Image (cartoon, rainbow, N blue to C red; front, side):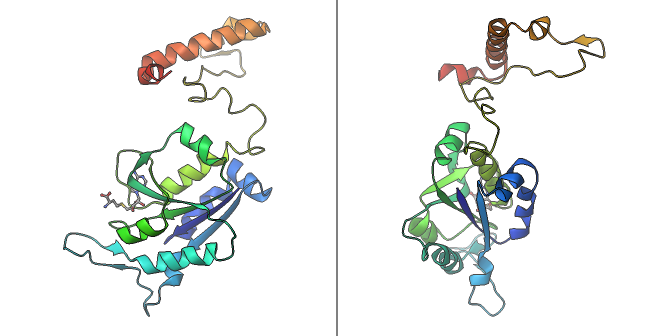
Length: 225
Ligand SMILES: C[S@@+](CC[C@H](N)C(=O)[O-])C[C@H]1O[C@@H](n2cnc3c(N)ncnc32)[C@H](O)[C@@H]1O
């Protein structure tokens, strides 16, 4: 799967070169291309923003540099990749959306900054606006990284087989508690059933715990089941 990111702060994406996503990039399970759309500004000082029509605080990103950066990507393609604009006005991101997006073969992700981007650019190239939650951040870079991480771990071969099948949200429940060695820590013992080797009982215990935790912490998830 290929991700192209349109941003003013490409260096922020270096974080994705670590850990599991870093390995997925190295093994080419995913391809990440980060484009600084400031390079497409025709302005001498490479400005990309201007004051909002109608007045008001802050600056708005002009449409042309983003459009030209976008064109430089799609001009070489014989298909139209899905374009996502990270925006607090968008649909709030969740695991189901991550799974659906992992079926795409190419995503272009636009990161806004300042007061956001000119609406006409959104109308022209954006297929979907996605928010990562009901709060406002300074830029779309961290939201884009969250989306790339959540989508990538649902792509075949990025995680080991079965890693996502019982995770929180995968079956409408939060995950059951996990334990590893030692068998006792600060007087707290690992639940007996997990040491029993009885797979059916372990599965039953995990399901009951997942249900109990979901009921207590996120009853709204059970309403949608
Ligand atoms: C300061 S915000 C602009 C907020 C905009 N003026 C508003 O009130 O909706 C700058 C950029 O950060 C990104 N951003 C901020 N909060 C976000 C969120 N919750 N989800 C996704 N992107 C977000 C968007 O790309 C946005 O264009």
